[in-house]
Length: 575
Ligand code: HC0
Ligand code: SF4
Image (cartoon, rainbow, N blue to C red; front, side, top):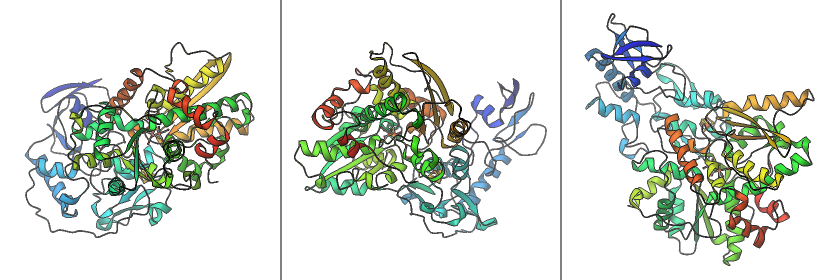
């Protein structure tokens, strides 16, 4: 440990702690722009400059370690005027269309400009008009608004291991672009949206589609059905000033009803359905088809995109299950449509997702049109639905709670934990272990898949047999897991894992690229706690005990993995 002082406040921190982090401990907030707690600092913007009391030399607090006995000054007149000049230079290259920018009121540059009292721009405006890249179904790049902080590039490379973005050209012509200067949709991008979640300004954002949902709601000939994903309920409150992790399920159902949707369903129901299908798939592979192990989860569309692009040797190991989003859509346009005698072509399914890749998934391949039309018509991120709720004058935090509609809405605790890393695995284990042993689980919680480590491994004893699992989150963490599998296969060794869960985003979907801005590990921990709270308060904790799931099989699907289930709920992959 070392002890130093920050603006006169003594603080003791572990050796190696940056001045920025030590300042936080001391209750001193140093302004930053390029820094993000998810990423290693690269000290490019210069906002966090500080000095010590012995030298006029300015240091970058994000990338400089605090030293024993030093006294740091974080905001004298000189420091403030340098920071102000940094901001003014950035503003000279930034369009002044804040009022119509998607990040208005939620922009880190705008906030800093306000905090530093910038009332005029002393430098000549030096804009660099650049075209928007709207080529993907998921996110939009507006390089004109880029402040070259580099967060998106580092997120894409370091957290996601994708390398889809880079800075091209030099000096004042430096610009953000997809790698090799192609359109983003032709780049390695997996549409995870982490770049948009980490962008401090309006340079990268979700492709907004709320108008399509509103048009469907306002069309009397269209029957609108909405589903909400597990992770949305614990994050949307943030957009309304509530604490991260606030569980808003009941209020959200009410808000969606007030927006005018005809039916309110829940993706968590389909998460339970996924477990029925994927659990059955796992048991079959584990007991009869060991050569197709490990089974790898397929519900994260950014991961599927990554796998199809970079790891297609793993296709035989992939679960053939569609994601819950797509299962829910398929069930709405088949089972629900038939039961209510509605032509699936007259149904419009809107998904509320924490994820931008879900927008691409909904139109990914023919399998996503299982009833002859799109299973899911439009996907709105948490950020988009929050805006729609606000513009409709709905006061989400003060709404009464209401219930989900019946048939495809009721969910178990296992369904809701899909929203966190390890949740799909834990939900699958709850059902698979129960089915293999033929016993009701005395305790449904499995600790092995839980937690924020990038790769988690565990071994379980199930009816005398070892089941080895791995859970990876944050796309850059998956290669080590896959390489372990590849090495064991090449050397004819025992498989390191029987079942692998992968989620592209850190923390799982609670950390999705479509969630409210500003998330870090603290936020993710609170959202995760909200999800586990939802599980704990559920009366039914296992997917195979969800009464509406049992009814759906009895009335419509037959058995898990039946012909009908395969037609509606399973998919193929691009090789
Ligand atoms: Fe997820 Fe999902 S858990 S991917 O993170 O499996 O987006 O929340 O909706 O589909 O259920 C996202 C979240 C989902 C799906 C579910 C899965
Ligand atoms: Fe990279 Fe994901 Fe952004 Fe694509 S969406 S550029 S993969 S961070």
